[in-house]
Length: 98
Image (cartoon, rainbow, N blue to C red; front, top):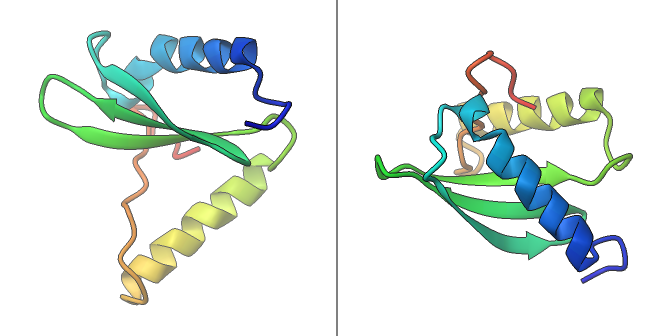
């Protein structure tokens, strides 16, 4: 784990993920599992309806909103052109994907 991801920082990120579950239409009983720490913190989310999602939380200051949107557009293009099978980016209930 890098110095940026101290146990306190990871706990704060997990708290924020739990607080914002409704952003993706998930309820408070959704299980949250830390999967990986690198440039991003990656979590597995499983809800009572059987949905399993992967949530990637970018490091503060690592990527701009424009860069994140460009990456999501790139993923869309890869999927549309059947270049590689990737996960489908999930928009929040407000329609935003980042």
